[in-house]
Amino acid sequence: MVKLNGERTTRLRPIEGEYIRFNPFEELTAMEQRMEDLFGPRFKSGPLEWAILDEPYPYEPAVDIIQTEGYIEMFVALPGFPMEAIQVDAAPDTITIVGDREPLYPEDVVVHTQEWGVTPVKFRANYILPTEVDPRHVKATFRNGVLHLQLPISETARVKTVPVKVVPA
Image (cartoon, rainbow, N blue to C red; front, side):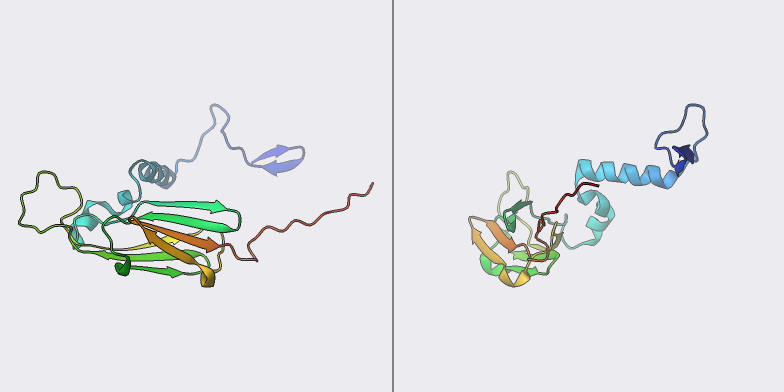
């Protein structure tokens, strides 16, 4: 603690030559965050979890979440998924998307390159929304393998400005 203008405050950086208490958990947490930023959310699950699951790698669709005037919009890439096999559940603060896709081609064909089409895919993805939405008025469309969700921002979450009268002191 340091006194600054008579008030106690903490320093963000130590003074040179001062001892600092080492906390290995802070270092590990920071390293885990950097690895997740580098490799994405699959870093946390790891190869052991992939070995236990039915599918070789857990599937997580590519998602863009944007905020427009009055809406949160989501664009979810679901190539090869039929519209009937996609389920969307909305809550005020989260969206859950569940999908199921059969293999795109039979297993007994000659494969020259294989990246994603041979295995059946089942997934469940939860997304925490940046602001509260009205789940009763969500609109969902599916076109060309892209799920588009329009989530109206709830009235309670909208920023309301109130003019404040300034008076002389």
